[in-house]
Length: 235
Image (cartoon, rainbow, N blue to C red; front, side, top):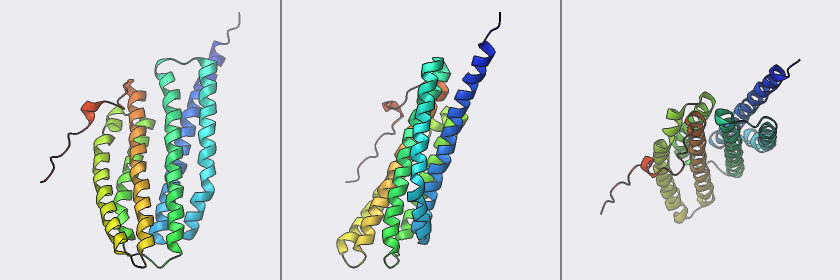
């Protein structure tokens, strides 16, 4: 009697391989959008800003494709254990990537408005925050693609450093904004850019947490023992 088992197993492997590949491709586009948005801001490159806005649709479509593949895999194959975790985490990672791309679009739109004005000397202040957010996103995606729980779990503490830098930048730009003058609009734009980068750091942490769940079946999202103690307040 002929068995369909090899055929089903082959389709099973193809479906789960396609899901992972779609997430990795989507991650590449989201990272590219962020990179071009920041280059547009730092280099006053209007074309890169326009490209980010135009290409955001690709990220939205990728998220829908991943959701479709994931739902089809759940219905058809009834995955369990690590295969089930792959479907769940892939769909969650896609949702976070879509939000990251949205923040890249917000940055590009802010940059586009700043390009139309005289150059602001304080724009380079944002570079260290971008570098930290970019590194968090890179490592979060590596944790997902490599199923590296240790790397994924390390992101939370690093995000605390990003938060500290973000607060310092907001204080700096807010002080300049309060001074008024012709550059006030630019400082407001930079405050929103900094907030988007801070949110991208948070979303990278979310992806890292999903990577931990994928690799080790541990849900660390609300694990208070992992949160570093607050620093004592200076009187």
